Length: 150
Image (cartoon, rainbow, N blue to C red; front, top):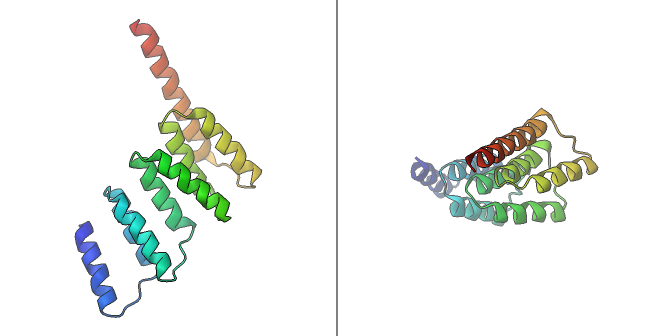
């Protein structure tokens, strides 16, 4: 399906129809969900080269794909790049990064990021708290299992 979507995208361009931010972001989302992260990154770059500035949703979708694709270090670098660039990140963006950190067992970093988001005026929501609470609960269950196995 991803290949068909990309073919249609190419056909669209050949017919002199200019893809907009929604088209690019939709394709990036599909590529990420189907584990084509390099293609998604290349498409984001192409988007910028064609003068279409990605928005927080475009960036968050790619960030989520990197986290879920096992590329947390790339996600952390990309997230830091967005902060340095001055992008106004929303609670969804922070939640994606917090979830990625929690899934990797980096609870301290997740809590630090929660504090930083608050410091930037982005208030955590129920998903932020639930993500951290669930991750910490799972950690405790795993620790208890390891202890009982000894």
